[in-house]
Length: 407
Length: 142
Image (cartoon, rainbow over all chains, first blue to last red; front, side, top):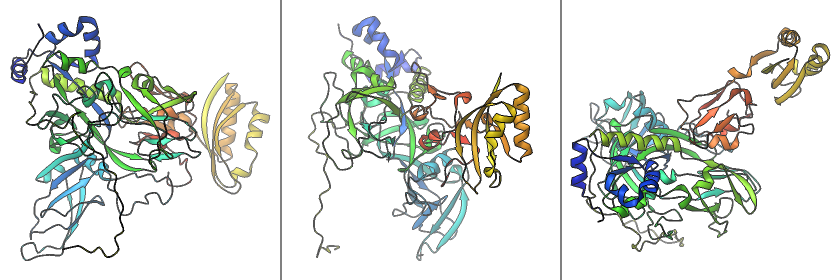
């Protein structure tokens, strides 16, 4: 008889310290050894993890009011501007924001040594941060200028809110051109000099639950070393893409918007990053537990690197100019071996996402659940899955002459 | 036979001297230049592997120091900060000598200083700047 479990039953076992929890790496051998049915009887939860650059990340901050009060209009943290077009003393600091003094790519390739991601890293590490803000002044908020030093402890709220994290699969990036490229996929050497990729593959959250049968709005997760939640599907979420027989998308597909309290998080799991010639970012640690509700869910979590394929994409012409150049597909076992073959050429592979750290996150989450510190949540609503009819739109350009429709 | 990798820093005047010639001719040292940036009337550096009799090696290094060349062991020049490293492994695909290496079983990174030739590729590709070099390898910015 096939096994069925509920979230409540799993949580009861967690509370009793009896839940059987394994990582998405460990589950592969267990299923191979014991078979799906027996393994499903034994395992309650499978934990996943990923630790890679996630540019669409940032933090909402509330600084508290100085005396007299101030409606902070423009705000800088260590010289990096945070968006102030929301309520007084609230701001949103994005991971890729740069200081106005940054030379960017004026001397190419730029170094991007310090940006929003680094400020978030410094904040979560408890370091002192220089806060500057200006305003036009109002009767209720008379103050026009402030310069002070803050720490994470000094401010009211710091809420990490990342609109697009945990990409379900991604391109393998190469360069068919004749000069070195500096991209968000790292340095790409000319004439197929290397191939970069970014995922923890068999450990990655959405690759272990390809149809989002357990991951949805409200799912409690490991985020940046603390506890967070899935807030929504992420931007560019595109579940209706080609999938393999195992259900795993063979192109970039689903994404998650996630939220959590920065004050609980750790600088080990939110790390500022600089990509030569591209910009600043934030490396985010994220892990999601998957409740083994039945054999089907377990089957998905037993996915292996060799069963997950991604497209090889040229970043000299193909990606930036949207040209269709077929370079074939590659699986993550091949990518993780260090070399792949493209058009008969042996090409070294460049990882951007950390597999050892992904494994560590899955291990930490496993311990949290085993020791009763972390219970699972049933999604309050699902996110769109393969049957959705989502079209990723291109931005169309139209003539703007005479268009002045401000009111 | 003694072998060591050193970094020699030259002033403008010193870069006009035939220093390598003297090391070979007078001290009988085998010289393997790993990396160099020396230009007429400009300060520069040389990363070099010297091998020979221990006495000759010491005398050769003393000769360099007498000339006013700053000599530092290579091992103190390139430092991998394991605490800053996120273990992504990007550097290992650019490292030409395998000094930065990824264990394919565990996917963990290690750094073997003795294999490093200070090419500087890892400085460019490391997103967390976990590798530090104590002298400026790049002409702009560093």
